[in-house]
Structure formats: C-alpha cells, structure tokens
Length: 58
Image 1: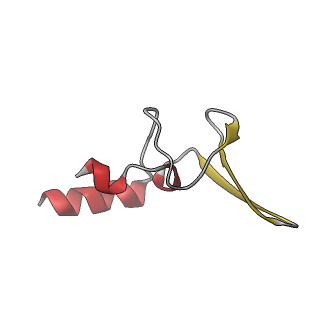
Image 2: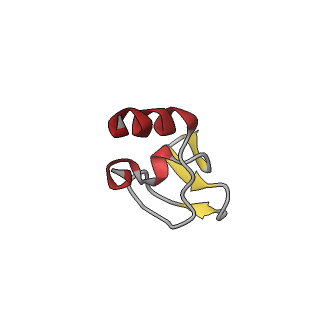
C-alpha cells in the first residue's frame, strides 16, 4: 500500500516554490531539488496521506 503513496510530493519535507520560469521542487530535509514523483528512503508522509493510507487498510 505504501507504494501507492510513496513519493516526494506526499512527504512533509517537500517544498514548492514558484519562480519566473516555472516551479522549483525541493526537499528541505536533504537540501536539494527533487521531482514530485521521486522516492527516497527518508520519506515521511504528510498527515493527510497517513489518513488516506489508514483508510485503505480498513
């Protein structure tokens, strides 16, 4: 089930910044740019994602 949710965009460390030429996606924990679909082992899901994961278990 985690595989359905595990990506940078669902992590508490994911940050989005709008710039003149588009968007910058950054991992504030790791300190570098990332993409929403990337996956890292430090992933910590946002509260809303935790609730969704809990619903799928039920």
